[in-house]
Image 1 (cartoon, rainbow, N blue to C red):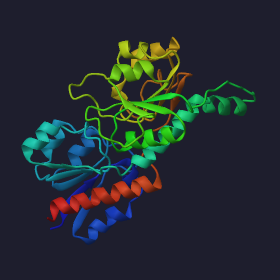
Image 2 (cartoon, rainbow, N blue to C red):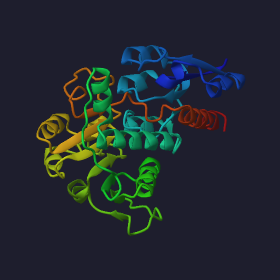
Image 3 (cartoon, rainbow, N blue to C red):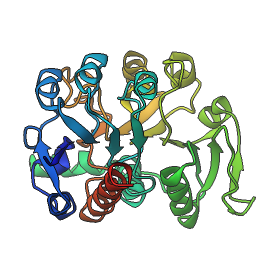
Length: 309
């Protein structure tokens, strides 16, 4: 009897990917969740029993779901985030957790730069104004000579650092491991989180959620930022205190918040998303043809390696 693999990322259920379909040739039975949608707990409770492998997306995975997954041996992510998984429970059950390290780093880094320029030059505001019959002109600022703060220097953060340094900006970064990135000391240095927030003109988030469940950018840090600072978030919505962020936007302390992530997705309340100083995209950082191909290939290979050692 074929071993069953559950596939749930939105980018892979809306249109079958060749690297997933080829698993059928290796004797696996592929089970897809609802096309193009984040599966609910109820749907996962129906689909996961009998599956030995799971190519998972960003959907919340509860203890009830893992309880129902009695045959599960491996969860393979088509990204690197695992904060949606009950890690302790999975470890106790002996379920392997595998990630597609670095597969979407270029796509997310490029979107970060797109959001950066959208904010610095008020591009969405100008576009909307012209389409409504106006001719809005907002004086922007240039990235050259500015200080960019980067929180998290993994595959994505270091690529963003490389790009902004090439554009003439300097970078101050926080990463608890302080990896050696071989950037010139005149353009790159490490600092703690508070120093990054208080000294940067732009701050870009590329880190996981704090392990203790706290909010990284709480009210005190948001209001300690340079007046008019641009904040970019292509990592996790929970890194920022949403209520405090709205207050900081209203006060002008944060000039723009450019984000690719919300909680939940899509957002139920538009209090933040509809703010005039928020630029929003719909979790498309890794949603490029190249990133999807790299991540899917790696995630599928990880499943095979775990299930057919």
